[in-house]
Length: 421
Image (cartoon, rainbow, N blue to C red; front, side):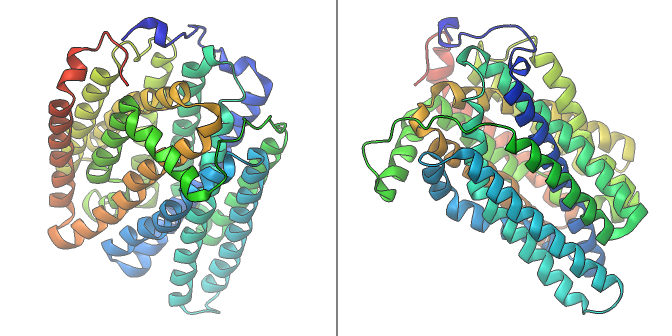
């Protein structure tokens, strides 16, 4: 890959030198912490109440359906409206929903409502999060490109990934301990507080100029343009496709409450540690990536990273010991962070300003499909095959997919010194 295609600066703090980007990163971190604290609490409460792996999988489906269904429209809206206002409005709706869930959980704890109503409200809240994220995610991801110059895109992608991964450490860890210490309803109140601080920081980012309008205002044609751009830009297509299918089958996050409660027997606090382990590995790797770029041979490095992810999932699947399980999850996060930086950098560099919302929406659909639908796949497979066999199956499928993509892209890999398009 030609170095001229990626005109990066090697200052590891380049993006952080811009005040609005710093506000964006801190707000994104707090938003991630809040949602993951809530996710851990919801998942653990659901499993305690239902004792059904499929109930955990259905939470992924409940979030994925509205997100996937509306993301392309959300990207269309983000390309034509204030990204800042979209972020503030959607984040505000999530905050209100979290507070309502807190009130319902408190009433359930006081035995004023049936447990079945609590379960229904939990699924309703997960659906609301997916609905709001369909608009918030493409707006936030496309806004980031307007906060730093092009030379800092890779550094911004690294720091954005670091913020998300740091949130993924703090969120699940304190989520598990908060649930164990102050209970379900009070944990949700902490979530509301974190979301309010994030909204305040997002509000301190000024509105950015809107890029020139596309030739068409027609929704169908607008969405079609975004899909066609991704399809014809092979580097982006292969990067997000590999992420989709590897995490769709290899992700084990939805199964962690079962591993914590029934296999490793470490309880809610242990669940927080298991959820945080991949992000600890990711953050440490991202620190290295702020100084050593993975973009010299991006497709090759992506294959290596996803292979390492698959092997790590296989080790976790069969591990009967907490220590080994944590180490395996640590390395799964380390390898995954490499692929995240490569994918995000390619998206920022290769996407025209006027199409950022739509292209980020396509990427968001792929990511949501891999995470939320992956949770549904994990829960369903665990119900049909058993928990450990389903996790083994996911790791094996990840390695099969890497092999298939490597074969499909063998010509591109052989020409890695040339720009891929």
